[in-house]
Length: 115
Length: 322
Image (cartoon, rainbow over all chains, first blue to last red; front, side, top):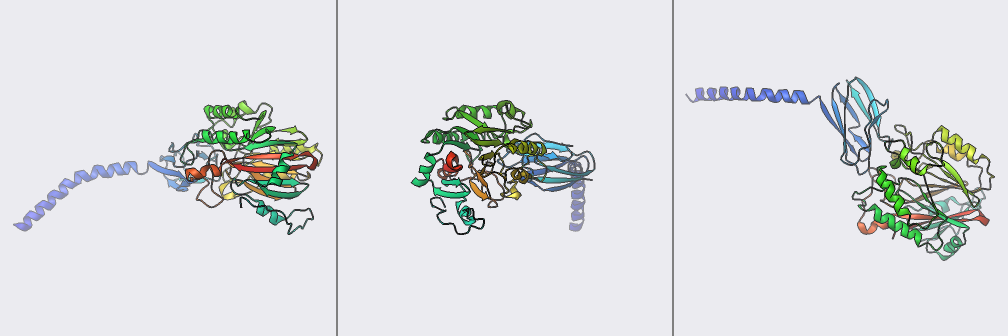
């Protein structure tokens, strides 16, 4: 009797968990390739190299006390000047390797590989 | 380092020019320490700021001018929440000089974010300074978003290209250069081909005994490439100045004083009136250096330059805002 109850409870638990799991999995699957953050800190882009899928939204946030910007070498994207805590978002649309830099402090460079 | 007399003895004089490399190194002042350097016929002499013989020489100058730099108007972070107040102190310092300067040079980063209101505030503050003229060169913070159009609308009336120009004052030739435009990924400051050609032509007609003062925002000598503290094509510019007996290069950008003498060329960087930056490599980045409030004014300052016509000598005096 005890054993049968245990099986019943286990089956019930699985049945309850299943519908809860599936929407969670879906939302993770929908968000994960779409948004990535790059931190601008100590005159560096972190991470300096990013590998993402086409359609990914990249958001740079300036954590420095000094303004920076984000400019790709081929001019395919260019932010306005970002003061402290300001953000710039760009969605990559074509596969390729993009080198970008801060045109105010050109020693700061970063790379995005779009697959 | 602050209060020492440094060049009494010439230890090494390989070029027989009265210049001792060790003497130069001793003269290097890192942060607003108040050193007076006199370059006279290729001989460098340095005095502590309170050394009466040095001040005596400076007082006999034919004319003097003051360099201020990096006022970063609009900056309000922890390293200095009140850049208006410190700039006012700098101007008071200029007003207190025994002889009013002929003019003021501002070596860039006038503003923090190129905002019209920031330029307006600096212009307003400078009205209290006892000088007939103020000459500017732009820093990278003055040409944000518009490739320097607003800067040139305000200060570039009689300039060429991105805002470079020259003028003569009592026998000294002054050249203002722009090295903060069209910067390339991974690079440092840049003068560019057009400006270099203009410079070559500008100094061609001068006799080699003409003292030349070159001023620009980013240092025209490589101080620390990892932080971009240098100008990629400065060697080309300096090659046009080699034939002159006395060349003084005045820069800002690094928010601390540094000096170097190479051959006939004396390099000097000025302190900021806004906030200090770390010594090369002594911090993870060149960002604003936070120091205790009571220490801040000892790391900010102005630079007073005196010219003695008879000796073709320029004396550079740094003083802090304390």
